[in-house]
Length: 324
Image (tube, one colour):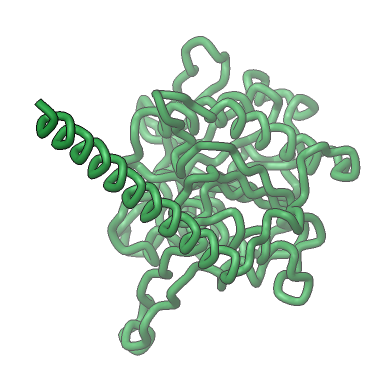
């Protein structure tokens, strides 16, 4: 059987696995399952999927902006469906999409595999028309994308980071010396190396990334190098964009990403209607403490009032019984 191989760099190659090129049912896009060589001895290949437009063979039907998206391989069903819908929607609009599925083992290794997969996609014949890239991801995948973006050699035009785990600790270092240093208590560091435009989409109930913390960071001009930052905060949604009572904010997240990617591709961010972070989204620690104290005081007052009412009712019952 003849495999479709291409050279990536330093003698390393990538290929579409046998039977791995299929049309995605219902969407018209094509999915190429690829194996990417990461070492010269053939050990530890990366697996990645290239999602291609219906007319991928017509160069004028392929966008000059490519999209690379990292996500977790054991996410919940709704999350997996959302990512698949996003990839297909982008490909239908003419974007070449690298879909990289991460696992929870050795995040530093996942970063390396994502970087190698991006190299393979960028050097493949499918991406011949792609001149620049937008990197994105969801959850831990968003952090992996941010880390890799700071090391990529290609032209990075933007970032779409969904449920970025800002307040989750970074993984341990990949070397013995680095692993002896405690990891950072948050995931701010990868964002410091990013420049250009970035979209953050998060749920208001995401425990790993509060709206206040992210808005405060994005409004700190002295901290980040981003020229344009957008923040879409989905009311009542969690980190998977699920809402109470089986609600779902996934379509809102997808629409935001599509609008942002199209604006970056057309160099028309000034016309993009997605909101920037706002000062009123930032609450100080004192505000949080006051709100917590106020809530505790209100709860205590409610308990005290209920106890007083119960005692009053009991006294009334005892008085009525005494009169009889």
